[in-house]
Image (cartoon, rainbow, N blue to C red; front, top):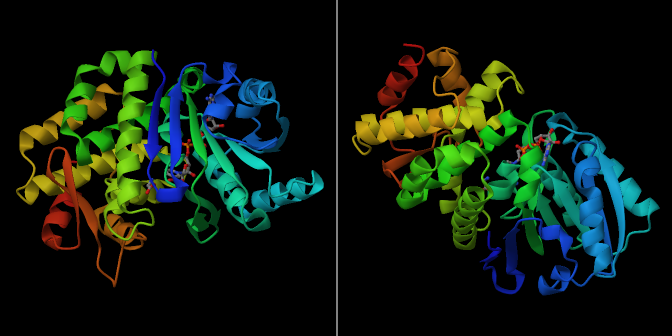
Length: 363
Ligand code: NAD
Ligand code: GLY
């Protein structure tokens, strides 16, 4: 598999996404990414650290840099102010200054919390993302959203803070638990559905290879997703418009996650079903064809993702969807499909069609 590089073009803050296999064997690469720090502090968790810290440490130390680590506990429930404070404490204890780069090594949780620590420690220190889940490789490590949760809601405190580079080692996906891997595939399907019909077709043809975690297939898929994400971020870095398209399926998905109790379904599992509900509404709106809806369902199902929405009851769905952050001026806004491969944001859909979609759940 050849190495691939994509740039996220943001003027003077442009940065590379490097996609490789065993990318961390060769310390010389550090220079080619324009990383110039003499010191790197890797923030990771107690699952990913034991697997990959040594590999990453060698990568930076081969390039002559000093390397250190901060370990946080594993899991979404630790994406908190307390964990953030413990990172600051350790950075201060290690006398980290503004010339040090923070390296976020892990899935989306580590990326978000370490990213926010980098954004705020001493008013901002350089950040490198090394994403180790499929979700993080195709979505959360790119684009600069960083956050911690508040008891009142997910990602309530955070900032936009772009990394200096995103370094992706596809080999790291081999140790990912099966359920986490499949959940990441839901976000992969999302890119095809919202903005890339040709990629959607490629996914349909490569289900078997993807499920086997074939590195060539994964490399292609991650590259296409990162290209799409880079494009969206370049167009609308701080989500004043089109970046919201990335939330396709997420309003329904968040309702499912909250309705079943966080953790019962993985985020990607809820997004898979959310994609189908948003697509069903698109069919009722007369934009998406039934046969394209069938294709989306078959692809998600082929990738081992759930396709039947849990029966929370229409009113509970509406209530939970009404709480979503994307409600502006009291109006629910959804991402729908104009066709397979083209999405749009709208607050303008008949409520009775949404009710029809929700009444169809469990039938
Ligand atoms: P996660 O970070 O919790 O990782 C899932 C599990 O896999 C964890 O137990 C983790 O320790 C483990 N793991 C990670 N890499 C592994 C590997 N290579 N081998 C074995 N185990 C590994 O979950 P996630 O799905 O990566 O991320 C979810 C988080 O991402 C949420 O907090 C969500 O809010 C956030 N997110 C952020 C953005 C963004 O743009 N910043 C986008 C989407 C999601
Ligand atoms: N995952 C949504 C975004 O980055 O905007």
